[in-house]
Length: 437
Image (cartoon, rainbow, N blue to C red; front, top):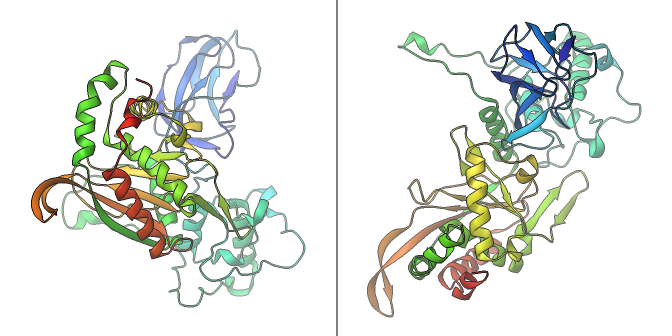
C-alpha cells in the first residue's frame, strides 16, 4: 500500500519532515505516528492509515513534501484506505491564509486557464496594497511585479499563487517579455532575485537552513513593516506600588497554581485602556474599505522560544480575574515554549503585548502584528531618581513603547492612550488581586 501525505488543514499544503519515527522493516499499527511534519503553522504527526510492515521509505528528514506525495510503502496486511487527517500537536505563529512558496513552480495545466473575463483590475489608491499573503508580496517584489495589476481570484480580490502564475505567463507571452513599470516614486525591482553573496571569499563561514517558523516570521515581519506606516510612542510608568502588591500577593497566587507576573498586570491594564480607546481595537479591511471594530478584548502575548517568537492569545482578558489571567498565562507560555499550543490559541488577537523585561534593555520599537493596529512593548524596569512632591526619591520606572498603524491612529490618539496606560499601571486597583482567591 502506498501511503501519501494527507490533507494538513486549510491553507497548508506542504511541510518539512522534521523527524522520521519508523524505519524499514518496522511493523506499524493503524493510526501509529509515522513522522513529524513541520509547516508554517504546526508540527503535525502523520498517522498510518492501516496496519502493516514498512517496506520502503520515500522521504528523509529535512525533505519538504507536499500533500499527495508518496511517503512510504506498507507491505502485506495493509489495506488501501485513504490516509487519515494529520493530527496537529504543536503550533507556531502564523497567518491563517499564508502561503509558503518562495519561487514560481512550473505551471500546471490547471494554472494555464485564462483569467476571468471582464475589465482588468483597477489600481488601488496609493498606499493601499491589494490583499495577498506575505510570501506572494515578497515574490512579486523579487520579480518586479506590481500586484495592483494582478487580478485576484479569491474573495475580496485576494491574490493567490495561481493568479501570480497566470500573470507571469501572460507577460512571457507578450512581445519581448514586457514587464510592468514600477509604481511612481518606487525604484524598479530587479528582474530576478539577487544572487547569494559568497561570504566564504573573506573567511570561514557556516550555513544553517532557516526553519519554517523563522521563514514565516521573516515574511510576516516584512509584510507588516512594508505595508504599515509605523510610529512608536514612548513613556515610562512608575511601578513601585505595583511591585509592592506583587510581593504581597505572590504566596496566595502560588498556592492557587498561578504566577503573578508583570505581564499579568499589563494584560489587565491594557484591557481597561482598550475599552476607553476603542480605535486601538480595530482592524482594516482593505477589500471592503472598512474599519472592523472588535467588541472583544483578546490579547496576544509574544513568547520567546528556541524556535523563534510565537504569539499565543488570551481571550476575554477584560472578563477574567487576575488569578485566572495569571494561571492561564503561565500555562500558555509553558505550552508555547514546548510548541504544544493549539492553532486556535494562536488566532483572533485584537492587540499584542511584547514584554522583554525578563531579558533586559529598555525602550524598543515593536512591529505591529497585522491585522492588529497597535502593539505594546515593555522593557526592563530600572530604579531611577524622580521628583515626587518636590523631593527626589528612588522609584522603579518601567519603559513602555506603543507602536501603531498611522493609517488608523494619529499621534494624539497614541498620546492619550499612553497617558491612560501609565495611569493604569501607576494606579492599579489592588482589589483586583483579591478576586478569586
